Picture 1 (tube, rainbow, N blue to C red):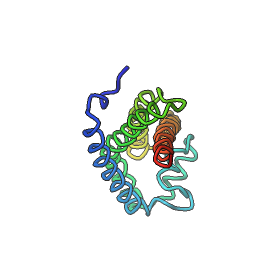
Picture 2 (cartoon, one colour; picture 1 turned 90 degrees about the vertical axis):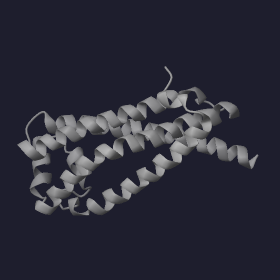
Picture 3 (spheres, one colour; picture 1 turned 45 degrees about the vertical axis):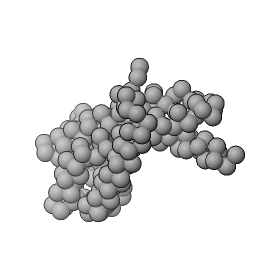
Picture 4 (tube, rainbow, N blue to C red; picture 1 turned 45 degrees about the horizontal axis):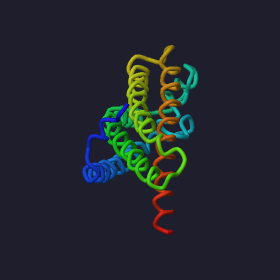
Length: 182
């Protein structure tokens, strides 16, 4: 099944890739600055500690360690993440599609996996949205099952699919660099 971004011409893909990548990196900086208050003894990895809590007890411990400033930062981050999702999904998906072209030309293994990897990254963004919904319910309504478990499962799937897409995109970059050195 073709990915919608494949309908773009190669120059359009490159332009959209660079724009979405620049915006993605800008969002990463915003998250780093705004999320600093989320790193506490009960949440050594900031918001990721809440995403990966996986149980009522651990999620309650993370939230209990956050003061009003941290909770506000978490709420901002959860909302801002809905802007971030399409940006990172687009930049990484385009990276996968561009990698596929390079890998096919170079006749490297796994060249045909680019479309699957790009769909996987978009699926990661969907899991990210579901995870954020679960975290928002926890923050607004209290921590009860199944929300910590749902957030954990969605976070695991998101991170796995995103990592697979990034690995594939960098695999294509390695092929490209290999061509340049030949």
